[in-house]
Image (cartoon, rainbow, N blue to C red; front, side, top):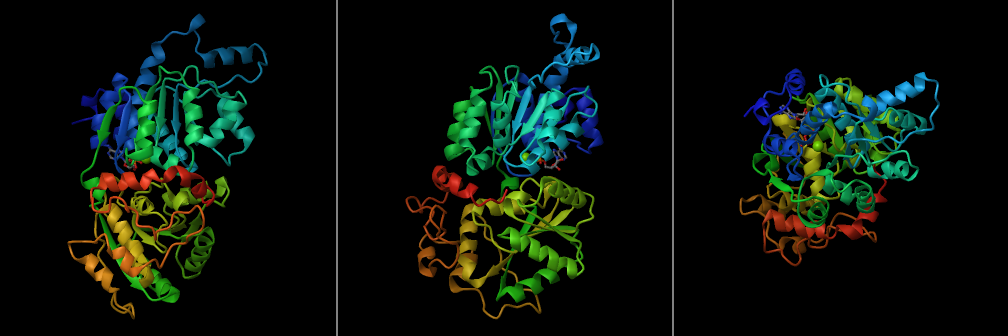
Length: 479
Ligand code: ADP
Ligand code: MG
């Protein structure tokens, strides 16, 4: 299958060739023709499977073709604005009337979508895509909106502000995309999303992308789409077969730090992301690594947007080799040079593990994901294994052997038969906090259905609890 066969405009294909894309990924193969036809889509497909192009290419194709649509008095709204300006009219701020809106959970992801759009639209007339984000100076946002962009990429919160102050008018909106919809719900954006959807014309085309279509996100997807084509891409990508995963047990912090330093000197390492649980740890470890001679930098939600963008730019340009990041800040990072991901701390939620390791092995490359785990965290690893339906092998490096060997429950988990539903209770809860409102790993996740090992059910049960947790999660303040 080729991009030509999907019916895309030659100017778009030219841009893809420039980007080194030779053939569509499976999700693109299915989504693009249907989206060009105007169908609504509900898509679940793993990180790194090429979802951005799956919605942006058909959208650009349609927007570029729509150029022929004639406007009253033969001028496009932008030409009218220009004409008014050259007449010396000083019209009051006119609301931007985008044709396409892409909602994303984080600023980084929004910027990434905008960058990809610029790349894909290099040869399609002057289609403008802009990001409207929290943390961006207000005058800058006004300036971007005054250019009346065809494509708006935004995080829900900031968009609502502009809608409420009349800066954006969705009456001409043709396409609505929810990217990483599951994540937006995790972050407590459900009300904002509903409000935004309600402000768009019912005639719009809606495309929803998510790691899963189970539970709450599936319900929302059904509500806001109209006879959608459901595309579910499973297969090797969802198992991250191109990413080798390992656990190294550590005795204490100093053992962990020495091991990290050692692993960062691996000759096959090009660039790495080290995940920490807190912003402060991200800063501290980045500092420590810099002193040890690594080109390291931190990335977390407390940094100003400008600083975050600069850090990501340096990472892309290869000036930073080791990025030390918190979960939400690192989400959506798409840098092909990332060969290694380290879990300095394990993530709070098993699905974050999947997003973390997805920072490596981009576009089919190989990657290595290493978790540095305290013996007390064995259970936590098991939960991740249960979520991903994969066992993570334990490895030992010569000279860095842990004093303790793996806990007995842990060795049982290494056998191909995997975990047993009852195991968790034996070892008890040695990790995770139980602050009110926070999900605690001590509760058996599948209490009601622990005998069913199917990934859909597991996922469904897991996400089913979200509504009450969205706000708790939001208050972690990591994005
Ligand atoms: P997702 O949103 O599914 O996580 P992205 O859209 O971010 O995935 O794409 C992941 C990476 O794959 C990006 O670097 C992108 O440029 C690249 N990519 C996307 N489609 C193709 C393709 N058809 N051929 C080669 N690389 C691609
Ligand atoms: Mg994506």
